[in-house]
Amino acid sequence: MASKHPEIKKLAMIGCGAMGGGMALLFAEKGCEVLLKDPSNEAMDKVIEQGKKDGVGNQITKYQTYEDLCKNLGEPKVFVWSLPHGTVGDSVLEGLMPYLKMGDIIIDAANEMWENTERRQGKCVTKGIRYVGMGVSGGYQAARRGPSMCPGSDSETLDIVLPLLEKAAAKAPDGTPCVAKIGTGGAGHYCKMIHNGIEHGMMSAVAEAWGIMTKGLGMSLDEVGDELHRWNKTGELQGTFLIRIGAEICQTKDDKGQHVLDTVEDKVVQDFTGEEGTGIWSNTEAINHHVPAPTLTVAHYLRLASGDLHQRRTIKSTFFSNTSSDGDWPPQKLNPSDRPAFLEDLRKATYLACLASYAQGLNIIAKADAANHFNVNYVSLLQIWRAGCIIQADHISSLLLSIYANHKTADSPNPMYNAEIAGEFKRMFPALKRVVLQGTEADHVVPAMGATLEYVKQMTSTELPTSFYEAELDYFGRHMYDRKGEDKAGRPEMGKFHYEWKPA
Ligand SMILES: NC(=O)C1=CN([C@@H]2O[C@H](COP(=O)(O)OP(=O)(O)OC[C@H]3O[C@@H](n4cnc5c(N)ncnc54)[C@H](OP(=O)(O)O)[C@@H]3O)[C@@H](O)[C@H]2O)C=CC1
Ligand SMILES: O=C(CO)[C@H](O)[C@H](O)COP(=O)(O)O
Image 1 (tube, protein in one colour):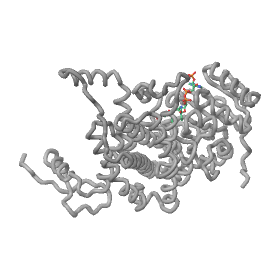
Image 2: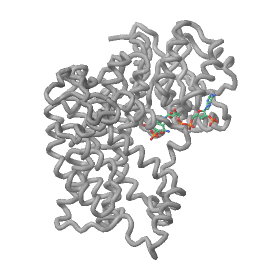
Image 3: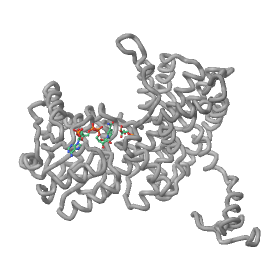
Image 4: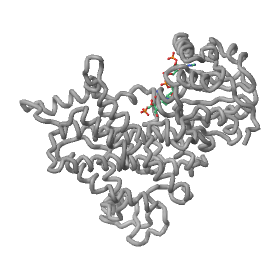
């Protein structure tokens, strides 16, 4: 159906870094005139130079002031932001505000905190300015070729911007653009934040598998690459972006024939710089909404331990200060009696940690959706994660889509309520357990896999050691408990009984 809104043919890209630069070129390639604004002339010139090489140079111009930029934009004025999160967006909005009028559109394509998005939407709505909070996934390469985009705003605003975004978005194998109406208010940024939380869980699991293959099984990087290629081709990890790029990373050599991966320091510092935040926020959200998301959380803790390499070096030296050597620590070699079978277990364990990351992430979204009235469209959300994004995982997407297409999420906030998903956890559990047991025995670092094992046990048990925990709480704090068989509420509620375990 033809849109009743005029086609967007001119836009301003504010922030021309890795993502903004790529998106500016992409929008130009899709027929838009693109006006650039960035504090760095060099950054803008780089985009223009690349534009010339790509045959779109004559569609891209740069501006130094908001006034000039706004004078040269059409009506309505359309801005795409690709900025660091937080105060930068606020100051850009403040700078633009005098030139904005009713009907102008801001598409905030940063990884912004959803509450900032809703605060700015509140500010804009009073002037009739449309503000879309849109997570963009796939990294700078997808920004240039076609990313997965996760926009949230009111329905009419999304109707206006979607035709443009659909042209630019990655396309799923069936040709569907990986952009759609995700929900209202800050829903787009919320879901992108959780996408990144899921991404962390999956990255940890793949890295753990890599560690076991290289240090445990003594496989060369080329062999690990071959194995990951195999995982990516068939079975439950088929079409998983992080597995595919992992295979390519393992087999990439520099011009001297050395594996580039051998030169990469063991240190993830991303969250130490404060520039990102999605991992921290998604875990905070999980806790605030009382959602157990241990796979996501331990993945984040692995990053934190990893980032401070100096601390690890210091503690390692104190740990071994009274011994002559650090021996084979950690980890030790693994000698599975049936190596192909062990590798198959490892593949399944990696898959289950990835599936658990998705389940936990969707569980957080469902709780936040109910609390914040985002009206998330789960089918659209799963659709847009089918291409152009970091958590792309073909089998997991198909599995979840087939389920979400037929049920009301509000009735079952955790994907594990579904028998098919629960069945998948059950089927993979023994392999995961064997890998975690053998990995732990040989001191391998397996946080996401280990936490997934715990998650499965905890979520499927009614025999946790928590009656004892509850009794201790009641003993020292008079925190009350429910007696067995009397929990009828169907939701977490404080217990009604106290026992005077020892008179005060
Ligand atoms: N890199 C990635 O893989 C992905 C990043 N994102 C998100 O996209 C956003 C951009 O990321 P990325 O491109 O990597 O970051 P970059 O740092 O490469 O780009 C940010 C750009 O914004 C510019 N900028 C800063 N302040 C202003 C301002 N007041 N007005 C205009 N421009 C300004 C910066 O200019 P200068 O450097 O000169 O200060 C820089 O060019 C972030 O929110 C990020 O979280 C989302 C998905 C993937
Ligand atoms: O948003 C992204 C991918 O989806 C960006 O790559 C982002 O920089 C990743 O940061 P983090 O891993 O800390 O979430």
